[in-house]
Image: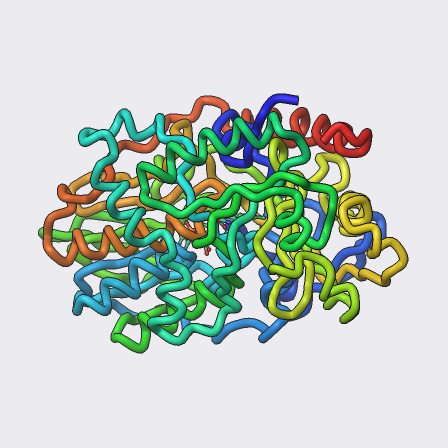
Length: 481
Ligand SMILES: Cc1cc2nc3c(=O)[nH]c(=O)nc-3n(C[C@H](O)[C@H](O)[C@H](O)COP(=O)(O)OP(=O)(O)OC[C@H]3O[C@@H](n4cnc5c(N)ncnc54)[C@H](O)[C@@H]3O)c2cc1C
């Protein structure tokens, strides 16, 4: 089997992970749907699972402390320096850092903070840039970005600590596990190049240490990034937005930005009820949920639906033996079960939903259970129950790097984070805030480009969901991976 890490696979159109009005769907009550055929009144429909737009209340990340505060809708007209559209990880970080730098900031979110991919992801904090090829196209060949990344690749943990955001942020390590020497050699070689460039600490692990960290004999080879780990991305996003509000940002929920027009030396964004915000600069952080207000952003990526699920807390005896190190686990060469055990002893894992049964929670859970039972035989007789199953939408670009766009002077987009948003979105949000505050967006440590013109937006869904993932699942069921 070809050596494919999650990043490789994403790049090649093979992600292993891992708007719209929600008519008839309550955000407050979203029970996991056990089977698509069992859909009843009040449960999200198959289409919402298919498009990654189930209520965010379906996300297991909302189960620990419930939904965050409801921010009020925008009424009337406002003036500000910077308008941020979209309150996910990117918009949340941008608003937080702008407010901290004293820049007047307004945030508009179509639903509520964390509603998009940021409240739905798998919680992995990945501190690596394995594929360095993409940086060859940067004017400085990536030098400034490497410096930024080296200094801040732990940014989710740093922000959580600095602002006291309670979000189960745990620097427990990012562990890549392999069953063969060949897979290890290939991965370790690539990891060494990147780690060297970024001054990162990477450990090579033998079978004994792997057994100690994972509690399993299945993966005798490993590469550990000690600065990675996990986070509850819904609480983290909400915490950044709330901190921004505390520092003076004005945050509005249930407010869809609908039109954008020039206004004097700046811009005016109107929302559905006719209210508006006049600003010097507007930054769209709308990712794969972009609406028609800026068609170039809406059509500038390959959307891909992914799912994640959480188990009920594991029985205490099992919780001690499954991933006792609590490192975030990825399998190499193919990561069909990105895996964490969170601070509530829940298993959280993710992948790409079946084309034919995207709403079938139990079917997807069973795929992971089979792997869990194989990896930790002691779990075979343990009652591991599904708690929540949800889907979300990832945005992929042609290039394997997020998009920092400028469409007209003062109209920006920061989006398309693929499955790497937990580190890159807060990192790039912070860098953009600093560049705006110093009035030097041209000095960003990454290039400002134009959105891709995507001729076939369904291409990645077809490749990944219909071909690669079913093939990988088959390989897993045959024990090939
Ligand atoms: C199932 C799944 C698993 C993943 N796993 C991981 C992982 O383990 N690690 C990792 O690093 N990344 C992971 N990702 C990717 C990560 O979640 C995203 O890269 C990240 O959340 C993107 O953040 P964002 O702020 O750009 O976008 P989003 O969080 O999607 O936010 C965009 C927001 O814009 C709002 N919006 C859109 N249009 C408008 C408008 N017109 N007006 C107002 N608001 C608007 C939306 O409502 C939404 O809230 C995963 C994603 C999914 C779906």
